[in-house]
Length: 419
Image 1: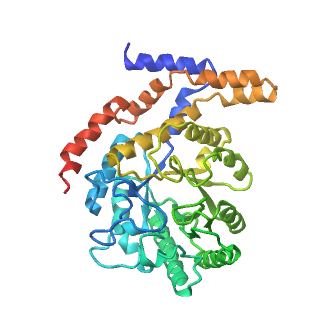
Image 2: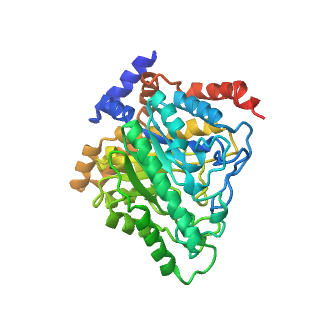
Image 3: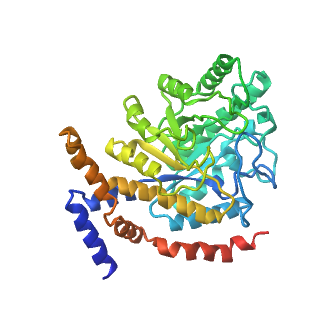
């Protein structure tokens, strides 16, 4: 049986349940993921020739050979990733990934000129850019406090950094003709019992108010704030908790970023979707895979991810959701990690788009909970793989069974030759 016939049979199965497969494929094709740049080089950046991740409550495990060492290498890697992911996606940059031309540029001095090359490169590929302030891998972050530091010199430095990053983001958004999302996450917190939690959070409010004092065209810049439950070195207290940023964002008209690895392991991020969308127009999501903690494993097609995507679709908020990837694993081929994670996220969205939401809702409203559960179970055995393969063919990218060889070929020809 040829591929088209296999797909047609799958489409008929879904249509029997009232699912329009063509509409699902059309919506998936229009969905951009924001691909993170930092998987390619273990969150090192390019501030110095031998830049590497240090401090800030995060770390990368592993030392798989072939990581990107230069702007040219990381862009080549990212273009390869793009060729293996169906759809037209965005790229998320960190402030430490500027084109500094070998010069020492401190964080509070980063400027649009350091990212003009990125804007030109992205424009040539027809992709949008998002941006992140970098509050780690810096001596002034070693204390564990940045925007909430009680050392005014330290706090002022990081305020200037965030202000500079918003200016860069607005520049990128204007140049690309679509809003650049500037995401702010800080590692601030304490390892052990903390008595002045109120004081640290009051300082963070004051810092954020100063950072966001400058207004920018919302067509160029959208601001989001990312919370965390705990991190390495901040096990007892995190200043920027979920409740803190939820309150701040709702009161200041900012976006809330939910990172799937930044909550309690038994906490459902999917459940937060319908709650927050009662009060906001848009949400930002960073998709990662926590195993024992915020360990940023490569995303796979997990139940948690499928449920999150299903909630975005069934709530009618897919197009109001900005979804980015956020994992970094140095124990395996980094290009392969990108491709696995990106494809898993897209598969989760396709599965969500192929659910018979209206029928499920009718069963629920009728109190027929048996039928609701039975239909959800039936969907698990429908020929989803044939629809996914059709999506890959339409997007002119390799099928899953072809990806391993493509990644291995790039490793043989490119990354294995990097010392």
